[in-house]
Length: 211
Image (cartoon, rainbow, N blue to C red; front, side):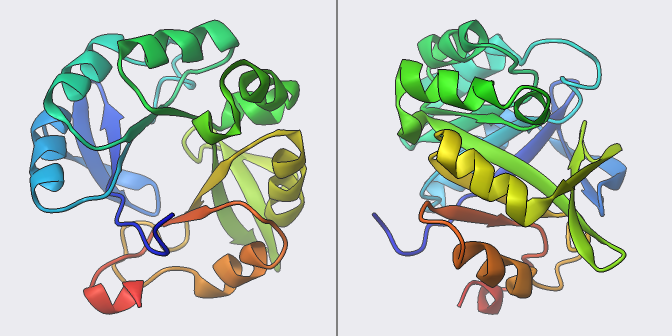
């Protein structure tokens, strides 16, 4: 395994890539398939696509986009958003995805993590966690950051590892889009409590943030 992987994460809404700051003020950032091809040609190790409104709008993730990405990419990619059962994940795998990412559905039904791990293997299951500092604690948020839970981030991630999550996509809502650097304190804290890889998301702005 590479000690460091460069993994662009594309938030997708209505078939378009969007960017914002702290999960708000979203703006159009281009076609996700075209951007994916650019990132791959520039040396990205993997890619992540998150349909950020699929769960909120109670719909499934875009299968056709996954097929288009699979046709054009020669690097692994993860797809997330709107996955609530094993059949959803199977459809994405058949469409060409290498891994799937679950977030809100896993919080509401933790056994989904276990079911997916048993069906496809832990290496296929990425747990996405959107977290924000509130009153001195790191709290899990759902539905694209719209809904705060009573779950503390560290406890939830440790629980998910035990259920079969093979990787954590940890997004700091406080740092998202700021280009001011990752939440290194939180990353170190999580890294010391689990034995699976962490994808740091939210805050990257310069190459120095990756060292």
